[in-house]
Length: 58
Image (cartoon, rainbow, N blue to C red; front, side, top):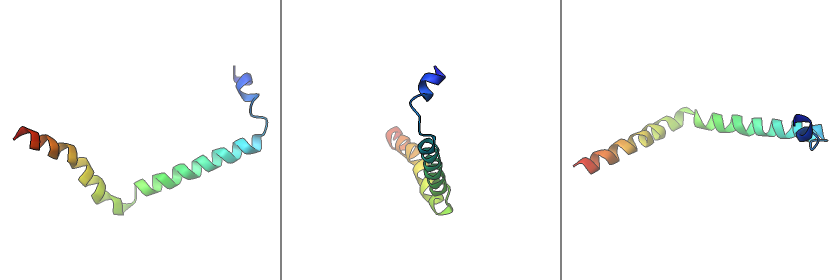
């Protein structure tokens, strides 16, 4: 089964390029998520479900 799947990937350079491209995109997204300037926004968003529950209980 592995050989059948690998038969479609004749151009290994293209496969390597795609892997590097996806890794770079992953690293950029990871960097954006963990920036300190986003901390206040994420804390505010994490409290939204709790605030909505408190509104429904009243």
